[in-house]
Length: 201
Image (cartoon, rainbow, N blue to C red; front, side):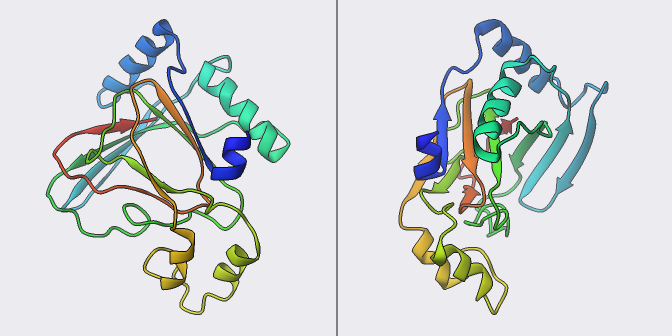
């Protein structure tokens, strides 16, 4: 938990055993066709096609156990997350700036946690996750950025955000990895540089 407290992000590798990994990998691969307990919405623009599939994990699933442990430490109570599979496919390159997606931004100004499970390797240029280390800390500078923001622009388009972006980290992961991030800190899905499908739970 110290790593999350200090940096705002933690990366865990090989989080599932081979049996659990095989099961969830199958769910991910079949997410585009499976119907039971799933609800799919597609958001397509000129450059990126995204598909969001909602599904449910059993209470004793290892990923939910990790979620309960982390949220208990941070919020003082376990929180059951909304679980979904997000598939991103680049249609055209290079990508333009997409606000709230591929430029640095915070999700909220209050403590906020997201956990990303990667069933496949994600390397540089494949829509990897970027995070500004330490930018999640709610201190006087952080509060001033939100409270004194006369233009109501809370991402990297605002020059005042530069002071939060001194320690940007490119997060590449191996398959079967879990990234836990305080997304009230500055983060983004990096721009695709090659044509490749990226799936994340």
